[in-house]
Image 1 (spheres, protein in one colour):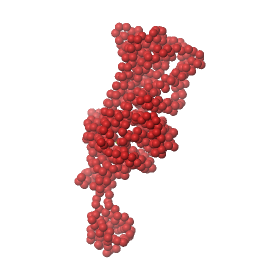
Image 2 (tube, chains in turn orange, red; image 1 turned 135 degrees about the vertical axis):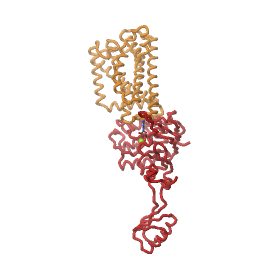
Image 3 (cartoon, each protein chain N blue to C red; image 1 turned 60 degrees about the vertical axis):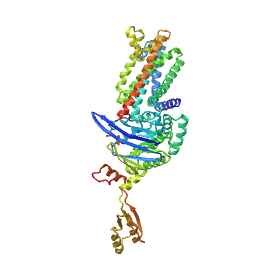
Image 4 (tube, rainbow over the protein chains, first blue to last red; image 1 turned 180 degrees about the horizontal axis):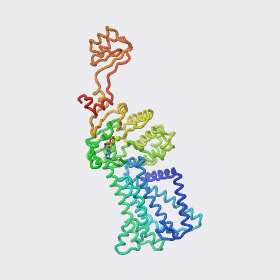
Length: 257
Length: 310
Ligand SMILES: Nc1ncnc2c1ncn2[C@@H]1O[C@H](COP(=O)(O)OP(=O)(O)O)[C@@H](O)[C@H]1O
Ligand SMILES: [Mg+2]
């Protein structure tokens, strides 16, 4: 299993370095955005608002947002690419089971993406001399939010397997993600609060906001709820993927047709 | 226990309200050291059958066992199976041969060091070592196919499925692939190969199964099949024409003389004719052989050319 993870990590890294111009373009664009965020360090329109308007919150919010978009594109887009280039069926000829391989692959490429982001941010901090606080307490809600994103990504991945074409869904999804991230569910009361708990990613985003923008402690109960929420969507997404795999195999349409 | 046992496979496709019976009651069994050629016209159901064996298409009915394991229930069955699928690349074009082999080795259950070892072995064996650092998309079609077969063998599977492995290859690459198939089978593996290039099946296969409209029309050892469909006639070709004395004697025995060629219907009299011909120089003595092409056409179009009773 560790070997599989390392193999996926290596594959992702090689592919990333082979699309050198695109990768460099991406890194430069990301650097500029971060640099802009650092310079203004004020209220910035766009995804940065999701977690508050302090520099820390803006940066963390932005990173979370780009990672989520990356996860979506990576899982669903990756499946579509494999189907197009003719390696998808080979991916299913694995004793590990395809769903597991795709999860491990997604975690591998996310690790690379996260590392790149961190390197860029640290570099900018060194250059500008700005300080950025990322208290370790943020790690659990951050991971929980990513779990939710994986759940959604595998849901879209399942749709990709079944319907083959889901590019249109992707832009709707980006907008939806922004809503989930920005919805102030932590301030909702009554039955709306329950809705907030059930929405994917939202509880984790609310926790991040509380800790970062409002300077509150991490609330144990709400952390538990956010974890359950993340696990629920992650498990749901992976189970759905297994279902889509069986359906597609029954229809004989795994490789296309 | 056989390497492959497929029992009574059925598959219907539902498309726009119509039902297409793509595979009907197909059973196959294979042991090691064997090449089975799976022949059939386009749309006969070859790919569907192969993919049901590989666990990529779920059969409506029937069962598959690969070294005793069911690939539809137990993914470890895939440890004993390698496949090169039809009409797709099977490889990452943005990776090199070396990287493809190593990656797929781990994906098929090897450790990283195990995959590394097998990669070096296979690169050497398939004569790809000098190309190991070049991106697959820059290789020739023949080399890509060779690599695809190497990748399918990376985890040392007992069963190799090859769907149209020589499609779109030039003559030289076809020869290379044929050599590989022969060698790989000689290592003790079972190779199930679909093709509609019948000469290739004739040269390579130990057994032939012809599938027609989703059902197996005939399944025989290749040699037996060719013998069954061959006549018992012989052709004797001479270097020079026959003198009239010998000609009348040959004709008295039942031979037919046309120019420098003599046709003999019954095998029993071949030697008597040869005695008569002694010491004239011969060019060849040959039994009329049916080719797999003729057999195939007879089996799938029995109306045009009635097949001998089987
Ligand atoms: N997923 C599918 N859905 C509907 N029909 C299919 C599907 N796959 C194959 N078919 C049809 O089933 C028949 C058998 O196809 P296939 O097994 O690919 O044949 P072969 O490989 O012998 O050419 C063909 O008529 C083909 O068009
Ligand atoms: Mg086919």
